[in-house]
Image 1 (cartoon, rainbow, N blue to C red):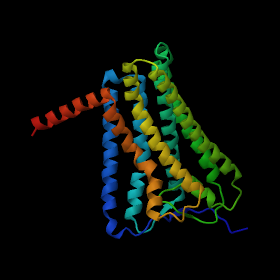
Image 2: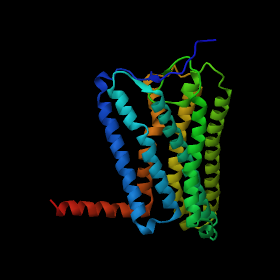
Image 3: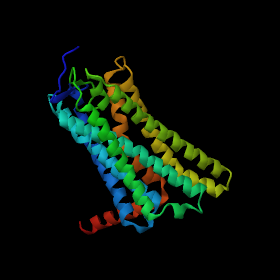
Image 4: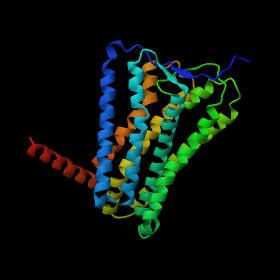
Length: 313
């Protein structure tokens, strides 16, 4: 049996000498600022404007909060590591990042699933919508959307922390649970089973979401032109957001489960970061531009801010 131990730190092996690519710092900072400003703007717009206090917009608000949570679990860490000469991270901080990243992914999928259910009720069962989507149920659904992933990821990490490891080099630019499990010298059967269940749950949610939208489209295309237009306008951003995040998550699962050493390092880093960096900006942009109510209120708010600035200059 190989020598095993519990390391106090991990080394992130995917970083390389940036050299002339120092502009990456500026790009990451600008991307993070854009994510914070766009998501905060939409959260404030939804919370302040009473006309947006509807189930769909409450679920959207939860989604935008999750985008802030997920990006904050990654971007500051990336900046520190890029600016550092030694790419090491303490074990507790590494597991904290794993918790943030994994819970972010779970909350994202559950939010998208809840939103698809909301659209299904609104379009396919309009007469039952307000009796099923009461204020109390909305609060309960949002609470469960956050509570379940936090508990599930806690179980996942509690199985990884005690593992005896044969090495401490993670070949990524951020901490990843499966990468740590692969370093273990001890038996990881339970870890692998839990990892498969976690992955399968995500796949099942995607299938259920797609099934909901198939039902929605079937009802819409058998109705009037106005009904079709309304359904397309509300469902398009949801589907676009789902496909964007699912594809990014799928690339990450493929990287974890298969040998990707033949793939160029830069491409591996890009695919590894895509689902964590693009989705937090993609969501507010796609919903802010395509949903008429949000777009109208945002224009009004930005106009008032601009007018206020002009008056005080």
